[in-house]
Image 1 (cartoon, rainbow, N blue to C red):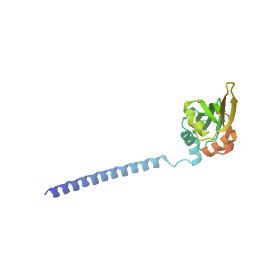
Image 2 (image 1 turned 180 degrees about the vertical axis):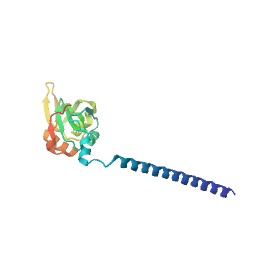
Image 3 (image 1 turned 90 degrees about the horizontal axis):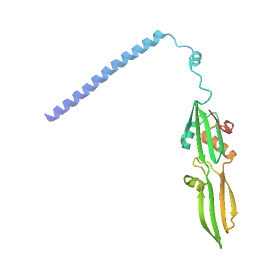
Image 4 (image 1 turned 90 degrees about the vertical axis):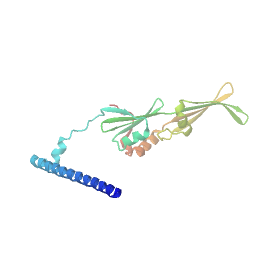
Length: 200
């Protein structure tokens, strides 16, 4: 008797679900019929040329600026941008692009590396290693920015009066490398990239 009671309850629940689904189907049919009637009373839709004319033109300049901290997000949002600008200003690599009326910007600091050492025979005793910022240690050691752009470098050695030496690694961005790297990263033609700055 317990088995039959449980089975009957399950059948009742299934019947209830089927009835609810039928009611929903009827309501959907009624809504579709009303929509068809409403569309029929409006008359024929205008030709495509008239529909396009009603769409407002996009703004010419950027209405808002978004400064992004992660290169992956910048690259995702600015893929196939119509115009991209880059520059190096005060030790920072800057990239900007206008997409959909928004000026997206990304910037990253270029590291400086300075090693003070003393020669002791064939060996060298390092006194200090100075990097312009603690957060730039990985970039300085890799010779590459966090965004992935390879840095060019120039080595400068200076002898100090006290017998010590300073080895400076001066990192910089080569414009031609940046041009082709940005074209690849953002999927744009190189002639869509300018060296300079975009402003709102």
